[in-house]
Amino acid sequence: MKNIILCSSNPILIKSLYSMLRDDGYNVETIEHPAQAVQMVMRRHYHCVFVDSEPFGLSAEDAAKIIKAVSPLMPILFVGDDRVDTHALAVKTVIDLEAIRRTIHSIAV
Image (cartoon, rainbow, N blue to C red; front, side, top):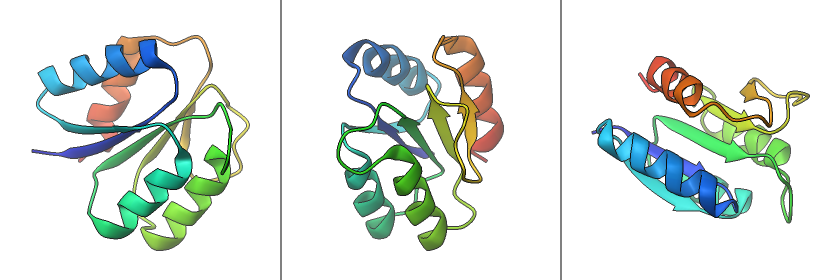
């Protein structure tokens, strides 16, 4: 089973993606803060990190830079900001769950 971090403070987005990804066979761990995603990546291997870019605390972009420093091959998917300055994929704010599903299937190898 592939492990994914789902980092968002948006309960509707979490509920929608969590259910969809669990049904697809992923082990999904949900958190609210990007700093928690960094801590989790340092403790365990994940196949993909999904970060909602609405920032509070550590920004999603800074978290991605730290995650890439610790785990350079870790795929990271941003939602809500297509101007990120990291090696991460980005999806604009208008969320197409099926597009996110396809993207995660393609990067969580």
